[in-house]
Image (tube, rainbow, N blue to C red):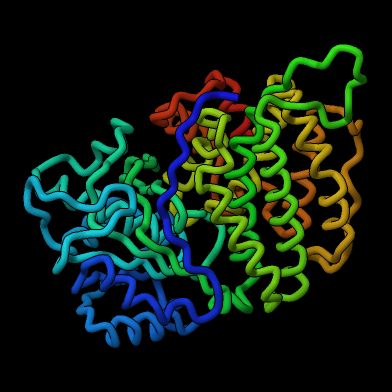
Length: 432
């Protein structure tokens, strides 16, 4: 198990009606003005906007609003939000890692899904840099954490990204196709009321579930077996150096699969919504990577190339296409972790496949040796297809002609890939 420092200062308020406390919490942070950031009409349609505004008004918090944050948000949108928040004087001190601000200040409230929350966190972190005349793309290119930020509050109405519980923000630069992440302070407080997600369309639910699973998998594929104990037989689940974390991660993956399966049958299942929302948040809160170093994130680098070049491609569903293909490519390289994951997920995936799928029929578990390292890739591929994920990226108009540029974008990702260029190309072509 690698050395680590774990610190997550996000305050999470989870449950029906928690949004009534938003205004008081913003006031407690010393703020008298906020910029409320949203996407389309969803926040208004489900009632989250009205509840947030009522709470802010009751607490006497002034507000301005910025709308129109789209999926896979770009830098221009982030700069528009930062401008609405106003300049931060050079040398000013803001909250560090989710801390509170000085009295009379301005904060930001993201009300939406991961794209809205990411864009808001990025804008809050870039505001001080912009006031100093810094290049807004420098935190993404240099991969240096930004520690000074305007305070952010998150109202999550769509689960999957985990953005409401971490200090990451993924933004696309624009026409260049570079979709990169930055490290920044997380939200001061996050409000999660899953009643806002009742009846959510299945394609949004599965997009979030696939994304949440991929976050947990990016760490779990890097586990390392511990040396066997003399005189003891090799167990089906060999003991790993990161045993406590991997066992937790496997439980999260099973929870996501089971919750999504229930929601496929009943989009108003409150219990399943709550389980998916919490598992999604914990999945990228830092806990799933404890002792596992930086994780892999190769499949994410490949997907970011796709949705950076084609912003209309949904991130989670594209991962549902790419991740099993990437797993097949690296299965032998990561055989112990892959075998463990397959054994941990076999029964749960089989149960999910036995339920009616997108075509109304059950599916059969994939054939093949249960001990093969490729087994995990086959299980996930079968599950995602059963859930209605497209069979390939061509579903969104990605073509053979895009592959050279996709390879280049993936190879330019700030976190270097372990795969050689020809293997990256092979994964992209298999994913078409």
